[in-house]
Image 1 (cartoon, one colour):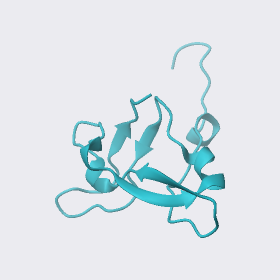
Image 2: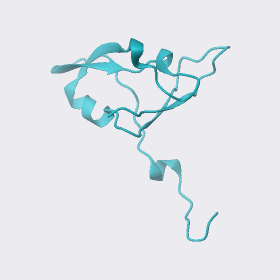
Image 3: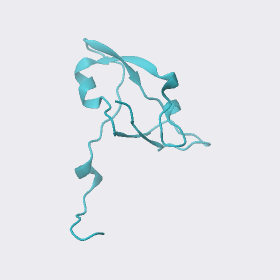
Image 4: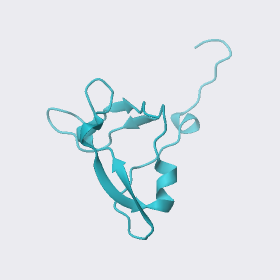
Length: 92
């Protein structure tokens, strides 16, 4: 490690957020959601087939993706494609 650098945990350097589920309490906002089918093998997202979901407006702001966010697939893997793919969110 370079002189002057410090060791940090991911928890110290990152903010972790789970995805959203269908809202139960209005008001709702209809937003695009990323599914495992949107992850590509080269670390990008395929946004040609985005699904939409009504989510609770108050829960959306903390989970809205921003340019440079790193997205980790945490479910949906299978024998030919294990779970854990990563993609960089490169949209404005």
